[in-house]
Structure formats: structure tokens, C-alpha cells
Length: 281
Image (tube, rainbow, N blue to C red; front, side):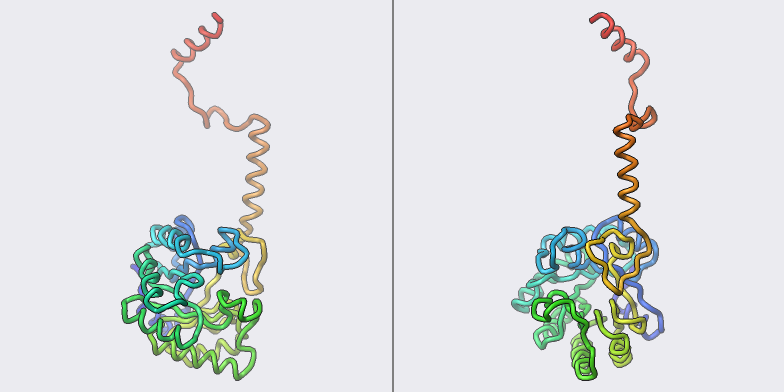
């Protein structure tokens, strides 16, 4: 059965942990959906792990919409969240609603937006009123990396933790159905989670959030430019691909690929014609 935002919110009340992954293509979405994942985020991290950009701020909405549509074709049960990229929701509320609508039309069930400013809170309210569910994102917000001053852990003291909680409560009241907490001390994330009605989804925020999210490419070892402290690698896809590619290269160069079973053959009659023609030349 297709998951919706109400079901995700109810998971918190039921004490059921939410499992989320970030994915970008049809087969990956299909496979993790069949495994039973709750949420698939089509993350702007595709900028780094798929397109090779050095920062998430370089990915465009058109690129994100292609990934979102591919994921929506693969996943039939998970809630699909489209990550709105840099400057697609920051300019004006009207433009943000228009861009968010494009994600819904591409197959997303909700959108994710970063930050907790008064503008983001108002935007969350307007999007929700428009019929577009919002996943909020606090703590470390990658799209603000230039103003934050690098990949810095957030909520490292009592005062800043309270500020994040205050923003989280405002986002909850504005209609956000869940809030990502990224790169925060586990005690701070636990405190925030305990004081919210909507679920928190942690990434580098300890085990006491209501759910967890990781990038699939980190999980399976398909991206090795860098490895976040909070990521757990379950499989080494890079090694598998390089090993298989090496074997393929050897088989091509030795002539063992393709073999007869992997090739098409003429009928015996047509083969004889070719052989006879060759002999008469």
C-alpha cells in the first residue's frame, strides 16, 4: 500500500522507527521500495554522487525533476520526497509554489526545503495550504554551506539547540509533516525529537531521532570521493564494478568474449553459401 504523510506522522505515535534512503534512479528506487523502505528522498546530493559537481548548489531544477520522475516510476509504496535545489524556493513564495508543483507533477508526494527562517516558515504554511506536503530540514543545511562556513556540526550548545527547537516547532505549526535533523550532537537531536509531535529524520544526529536517512550510494559504496562520519557502508559496489570490468576487459582481449552462446549464427544453408563464396574468390 502506498505510504502517505499521515502514515509517516502516525509512525512516531506508534513508536515505529522510520527508514528513509536517498536515491536517484528507477532501478535503485524499485529495489529499495521492494525491500520496504518508508521514504525515498530524491536528494540534491545527486549533484555530487551522480553528476560529479563539487557542491549541491550547482544542480538545477530540471536535473532534479528528471531524477524525481525516474524514482517515481520505480517506487510504488514508499513516500517520495523531492529535494528542492538551491534558489528554487528562496526568491519568492509564488515562484517556490510553482517550482514545488513541478516536483509533484514529476511524481513526488512531497518536497523538502532547508532552513528555519521566517520566510521558510511562511513558505511551509503556504505550500501545505496549496496541497503540497513539506519535509523541513534543520541543523546543518548544505545549501547554506557558504554562509555557515563549511560542513559544521550544529546545535553544539544549549542556546543553539533551543533556537533549532524553536524553528522546528514553528515549522511543525506551519504544517511540516517531518523534519530532517542533520549533523547534530545526539543529545541535542534527542531533545528536539522529544519536544515535537511530527517525526524527526536524523542524518548524523544520533539514534534517538524518529527515523534515519542515508544516501544509498554511500550505503552500497558506490561513491568514494569522500565518506561522511555518519554513513555506514554495507557493500563495496566500487570493488565489485572494478573487478567485473577487469574480468570483462581480459575476456575481450583474450577473445573469450563473446562465445558461441552469446553470438548469433546463420543457418547451415546460409553458412555454406558464405563458405562457398569465399572459396571461389
